[in-house]
Image (tube, rainbow, N blue to C red; front, side, top):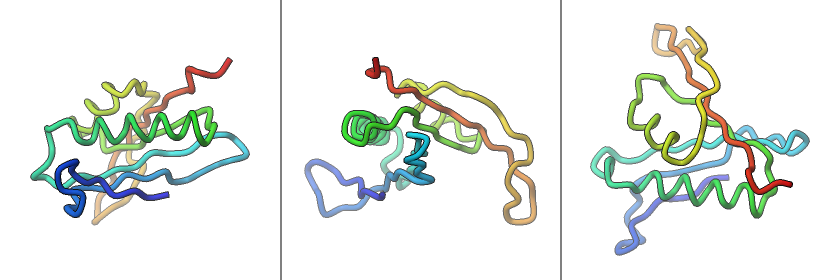
Length: 116
C-alpha cells in the first residue's frame, strides 16, 4: 500500500511517499517504509505522515505490530521513529549487500497500544 505525501497548501506537489510493505495478515503485522525529498526534511512532515499511518494501520487495518527497518546511520529517520513511539528492537550487522558493500540495518517496532 503506497500513499503520496503532499503539502496541505499544494496537494499537487509530491514531496514524498509512505507505504505499508511486507504485509503479514496472518501475523497481524506489517512494515512501514517512507522517503521524503531532501528539500522538505526537518519540517515535521514525515512525523505527521508516520503518525497517520500508525493510526490507520492499528485502528482501521487492525494490525498488532508495525515494524520499520532503517539504515542506522540515518539519524533523521531514527528521530522520526522515536518521536512516533517506535522502539529500537535490534541492529543487524552486514544484513544487506548493496552497491558493493555490506550495510547494517536497525529494526524498530511498535505494538498496538489500543488492543485489550
